[in-house]
Structure formats: structure tokens, C-alpha cells
Length: 246
Ligand SMILES: C[S@@+](CC[C@H](N)C(=O)[O-])C[C@H]1O[C@@H](n2cnc3c(N)ncnc32)[C@H](O)[C@@H]1O
Image (cartoon, rainbow, N blue to C red; front, side):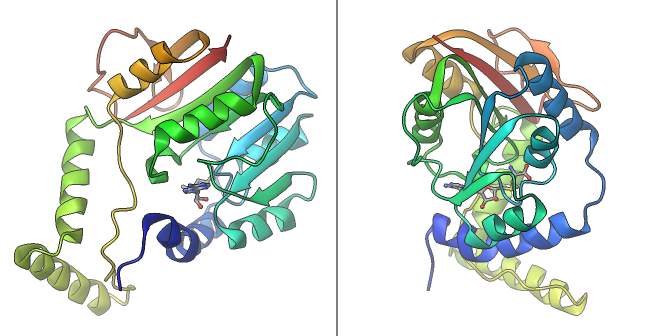
């Protein structure tokens, strides 16, 4: 029976993520630049919240160990359990990005990295991130850029394989047989669990909300580069946004 996206993320995706995080020992250049950016913009001892925190490693863990008070929320209970094992000083709890159970204006900085494309109603989640952020606080997040050709192509292929058309089903069958022959887990479900975003949707969101300043960066290793806000930036598969709340 098909399951909805949030159930899929909670019960299926989270197992794959915990396993892949377990095998990752390198923090990675991009994660390091995200931590440096926060350290540069937000004073130590400030209250941070990571939305879709996963296991908390590496970003929340790094920031907590460097003097920040870090909270975090994730839809998957197994990831939150692992987060608590990795770092007891992170106040992690189970919750939905689209409905954050924190009072308004609780944090100096709210961020969501590597995750916006898994959230079904991203703009609701961004509104929530702004709500729980203090006035003049920062909201940071990255998106997969739907205006980028490679990203759009990968997404269309993913959608096609999940669609119950005869051709889509056939392709999925062939690919799953291949996966099984290689000793990998087949992927039988019909869930479209990740969705890129058009940057203009974010620019529209910015102009509708109480945002004092907004910056956009193209994500490339080792460090994101700042861009102007007038284009779709289709050269970049991933874009990073930094918003300052009014
Ligand atoms: C690729 S992982 C990234 C985790 C973490 N931010 C990191 O950088 O390691 C994506 C995370 O998004 C979480 N997630 C997806 N949809 C969510 C939602 N609606 N509310 C809260 N968390 C969600 C998943 O459970 C998963 O932990």
C-alpha cells in the first residue's frame, strides 16, 4: 500500500540516513563552511535550532561543542534517539518542520540544511522557522534548485519511476532486479519523497514576509559564493539562503 511522504521519511528514509551517516567520517567542506558561516554571523552562547536535525552530526554537534546552545527537531524518532546518544547537550526532540512546537521568537538562529527538499510544504516550514526566530535573528536553509537542468532531469526521472505507468513500472522492475543481483535492497515504493524548489518561490516568500535582508549563495566546494537576487541561478544545483528577520 502506498504511504505518504512523511510516513516514508519517518519509517523508511530515516533507516537509510542513519546507516549512511554511520559510514560517514568526514565532516565535508560544505558542512564546514556552513558552521563557519554561523560562527561568523551569530555570537557564541546564542540559541540555535536545527530543523530536520537528523542525528545532529556533524553540524549541530560541532556548533554545540563550539559554545552554542543547540536545540533540534526531526520527524524520525530513531534519528532523534541517535542524536541524543551522540551529544546529550543538544536539546533534540521529535517534531514536524511544518508545525514547530516552540514558542515564537525562541531562537537567535534557525537553520535547515540538506533537508528542505524532503518537506512536503516547504513554505509552511519556512514560515515556522521565521516565527520561532527572534526579531533580527537569522534563518538559514539550502534548497535543491529546480532551475538547474541536471537537478530537474534527476527529479523528473525519479517522478517517472514512481508513477504507476506501465513503462515506469517496467523500468523500476528492471532497475530493482539489477539492485537485487548486486546484493542491494530493492526500492519498490511509490513515494516521491524529495522535491527541488524554484528559487523564485523563495524570492516571492521573502518579499511577502518580514525580512530585513536576504542573501543567496551558490553552493560549490569548498565555499558557497554570494549571488545577486535577480536570476534563477541555473548554474547551481544547490542554493543557500540567509535571511535576517525584521
Ligand atoms: C538528509 S537528512 C539531513 C539531516 C541533518 N540536517 C544533517 O545535515 O545531517 C534529512 C532530514 O530531514 C528530516 N525530515 C524530513 N522531513 C521532515 C519534516 N517534515 N519535519 C522534520 N524533519 C524532517 C529527515 O528525517 C532527515 O533527518
